[in-house]
Length: 493
Image 1 (cartoon, one colour):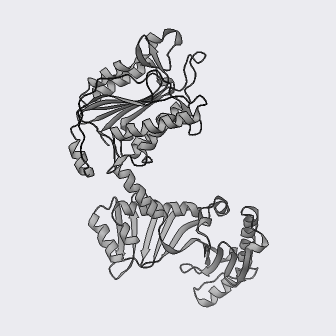
Image 2: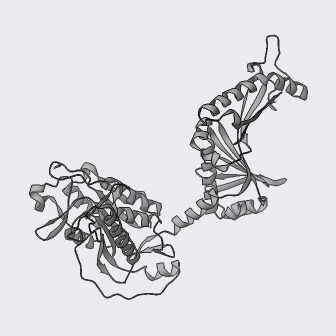
Image 3: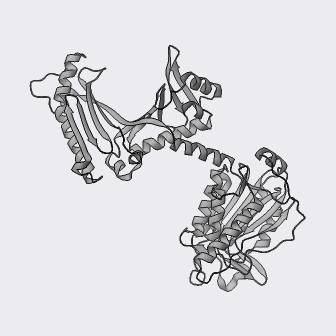
């Protein structure tokens, strides 16, 4: 998909707005179409989006000429258009932002002229998508022959030299292309985008989207949907026309998309025994509310001073638990019956609810005798849905930077290390460990702002700034997806 060159045009509003109506959702159609191709592996810089005031007749014609001149023999040209179409003096035309209803012949562009221009290119693989009225012109068809089923690699090989100039049009010449108010798309474009996003059932052959299956899908679903949403039960019949050296060709390769989706699905269903969200911070002992005039900050790190620190921290713990209680009652609407137990001891506090436990711990710093460490955590979730609840995350919006997952199965740390070192690409994924203790390691992944720590029975995700529990879970899912893309996924299940 990297050799796809595209021009994507949306003409939603017109200068002659008093006479030419707005095309509902044209901009959204074009943007989503482009995004779908990018997600399939097309280079963003190779897919130019032309919308708004840029869609003048001169600009569109110049951009099409440039696309034709730029394309190499190995490139696939993709042209997408969403806007008004007109039938003028027996000619099918697309409109431009500066189209004038009183001079359609000179202010529009004929579809045949567009196709003729693209045919001048060195590319022999050209796909045009037209979502507009009067778009269904017809070419003569060539002889075709069916093929049997092959694997993805076989199919790619067989069709590597297939030549085609094919136009997928949203309707016949005498029909109108309908908008779908519920989906915020043109009806036909909506189903085209669904197909490119991998959401069209039973139309893919070994992850490949072929022209004949795409047309069959678009024709069936568009006609059915238009009948449903129009009171007059209107007809809209998508058509496919052009030149093909084979009965069908590959419109899109969705292999990467489907593989990524599998990994994401497995990440969401990742099995672990327990999830703990936590955050630790250090501060001076003299700032504790229990530190009184005449007290002296500790000079030694020992059990005696830690016990004293924990004792004077009780007031801080009580205040924090009270603050959390207020938020839980206000935002989560918890009642008295939803609070099970509150414990306040020297250096420890626990607020238990029917959904989870909120825990605070205070200890002496192990690096500075004059400082204490305050740790907040949420654990013992009774319902997994709580973690992604909007209200729950509103309460703890920016409180945690660490997610610890305690695993159901042990992780083979040595195998994980060997696999990552076998990839031999530190810029992509790297691992740090000590040969004297192979029960743990730290993994760094390109683009992830944080660290991932593995131990035999747990995975710990640490991000660089405090965030919500839901965001931490999403960070883990992204890490899991990246591990899956490098082949490490089976080692962490």
